[in-house]
Length: 220
Image (cartoon, rainbow, N blue to C red; front, side):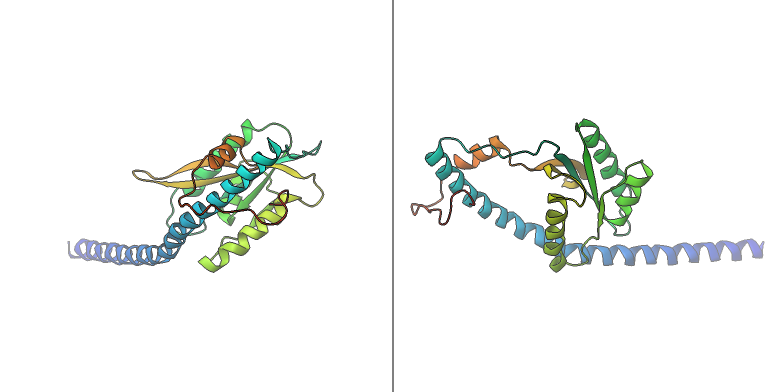
């Protein structure tokens, strides 16, 4: 009887120690996430500023040319998909969910497609599903590493080595939602959506000091 009680005490002690370790890991993860949440808030303000600037450009181009010239598309251009996962601990089915959504997105695309994985774990999920990614991007370990990562993605996806130019680029990632925590979404990044351009062009400027576009309009 005493042996059974001793074993039970050891099990309870082990469970308490494990709970303490898990609590500590969660606290560390939460403190690390804070800097990225602040970055997201800052990017939201930056995005609104960029949208207003683009709206000015689109209005001026439309006024000068009537309609914007359609972008030239290469005959053998391909579609690209960048899948963003997570290499953090304690994320549950995060990578599985976004990988499954990426597979569903790929099934809707026609023609040749190229896939890039941002994160080693989601890269593994894609390989297990029969997808051979064209490249792997290491996820940033700090906010300061986000900009270099974006630059690498843009450069490598624009014209992959040995492949035709990527004419259409999609992003696949998990988006925060209120109740379930996150949900997978796909977004076309390039080419710019025409309805979105018209929407930005129709937005009123927030002050009476109207801006002007400087430089060459085509490059703007």
